[in-house]
Amino acid sequence: MTAIEILKTNLLSPLVLAFLLGIFTKLVKSELSLPKDLYSTLSIYLLLALGLKGGVELSESTFQVIAWPAFVTILLGCITPVSAYFIMRKIGRFGQVDAAALAAHYGSVSAVTFIAANQFVQEMGKTAEGFMPTLLTLLESPGIHIALAIGAMKRAKSNSSVLSNETKTNSNIFHEILTARSMILLVGGLIIGFLMGAKSYEPVKPFFETGFKGALVLFLLEMGIVAGARLSDLKKVGLPLISLGILIPILHGTLGVFLGHWSGLSVGGATVLGTMAASASYIAAPPAVRMTLPEANPTYYLTASLAVTFPFNLVIGIPLFFKFAEWLNA
Amino acid sequence: MKLNNFKLVSIVCEPVLSSSVLNISQALGATGFTVTEVRGQGNGEKSSGEIPDLKSKIEVIVEPDLALKIMNALAEKFFENYSLITYSTDILILRPEKFEK
Image (cartoon, rainbow over all chains, first blue to last red):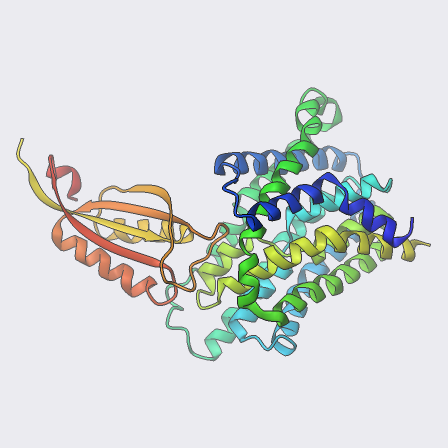
């Protein structure tokens, strides 16, 4: 398939179209929005399903197969917040605190983008390794911590830390990230899946797998509405941040695909790992950043992550990383 | 039963602050609280969460002295960097012992 054909297939997938419908909904100022409880239910369902399936497949993998991919994933988790910080500082000319806040988002990972990438490679006939959800959990937390640590250090130096005694301690933040909804469901699902194995998974499988793609379409519709609501903020954040919101995922994604390929992942697996590295968190990172770096402007990080990077990855990034993984593999 | 003069302190803030606000008011002596999810917008540039206009509204019933104490503590801690407003209203309640520590 040529790059254009891949792009077209992706653009016409139900996920992307539902997302675009969500944005359209906001553009025409429709009152449509998913009830908040449905949104929560869908995210619980999606994350638990992802964890369970990943856990079952993990129980059938050997340590040797996972060791290298797990190592490069942690490596990525350490590199991406630092690279994002320096790009935001040097090219974007952002202040230290804002750059650190942005880096926390780009260092962490968006689960929805991850799921979308998994679906995409499956459609392309290159299903990713079953242990990918395990890698997702490994990438979630180091990025946020490293970036927040950079931010806290810089702020302490520039003495503007009027709030230093009031901000949460690092262990508090650690506790919050580890016990966040997404982590409990993902890691819990992984452990349950791992312990019960394929045979016990059979009876619950229909519930968690048959509805999965449909639920994802609904979720993407809501994501579109949420992203659409932020479009007006694009003017506020300006062209530099919009450009960096595209440049950083390309850089991180390429690095992720490269390291994934090097660690022995398949084309599908390398694409998904690249997409994970390219994605910016929008659930775990914002509250952690808001509490630790209160001076950072939320409009920057929320708009960049939700209204720029997420749509970019969904529409262009994933096919791009797939093409790169195919090229590396050839 | 006799009616007693108390204060209702209301706090409307970013959802991420809810637990801190509750901790502060309880540490200072509030015995209970009510939290509702509300929507709204002020003039604060920095007010934005995952869903932009979603806010938490926290209400506590306390003695008049304590109301001011809580409001001042919140002001000192959050006014500078967060989106938070607080106000108090005079109310009449039954069973005052329920609201005193």
